[in-house]
Image 1 (cartoon, one colour):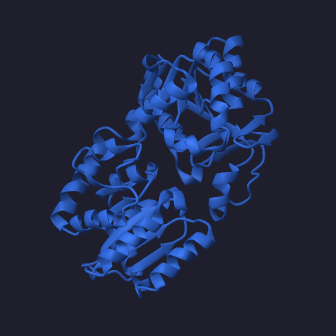
Image 2 (image 1 turned 90 degrees about the horizontal axis):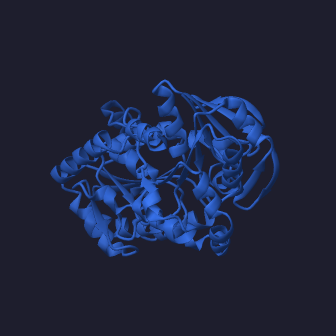
Image 3 (image 1 turned 90 degrees about the vertical axis):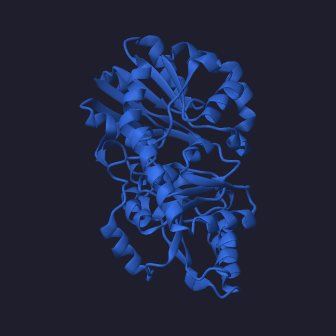
Length: 387
């Protein structure tokens, strides 16, 4: 079967669903391509320059992270939208049985709907990740226009419409006007073969980080930006460190230097700098080593795909009660704290200083990924939903 994924911006080295899904479908012996633009997203590039290199990658055929990729020249680029030259011609050339369009409220999604209007012999699946937390986006004023002018076209041409969570499903219903009964939910997942606990990596990394066997390492991985709340984790950890001498924190990612420096200054005033470890963003494939070295994973505000990857490595997780994905800790595999309440977060972190509780919850995290939330299962679900 020929499967073509389409995405405005594609960053395979960083992971994300759009990397793992086509790669897993290729493992199922399908012929899979990604069609995308010749550049990286301005927003994502800003936070990951050191990993991505030049923002303009260039047009042509590439094999990136094991995925066959066609990058098309860009005619123009405006905030959150891009026009790829020759998009329809390339899709027709690849003769897809299934097209999976990542994103709905953009120009590319409309172009693919019109292509389906001319060429009806492929199944069209739209996949959307938006949620109400995205209402702070500068594009929020355009959702009524999209619903009035374009949503009906996409609904008519789509063979399936997929949300990644129940909250995304409700967003698609309320903002795009799509009937709930038309929206399937296929969750995000983790690569359970790549992401698994590795005792040799744990020893190696903890030695490099000067950690002893008694140290309990809390990890956060993602953008170091205020909306993600790492400063809340810092505040909670300082409270806990004043009581427990074996608490350490690892923050993995990049972000605005002014914001990071404010956190470092807060830490410096407590004389606890040696208990915090700052690590630059790493390629997705290197995260399993850091998770294996850690004991608990924390996402203070918005959860991310990285949370599932930490769970795959056998970590218990802590997340905010306002997260869009609370179901991820509904299997006795983590704890919930009151959003932005550093004192409550410190209390939940303290509970997981108990090694027996960590072991039990970490085991449940891994089992959830193996049984339900891995890309092998999800790759099949995307094919089945198009049938």
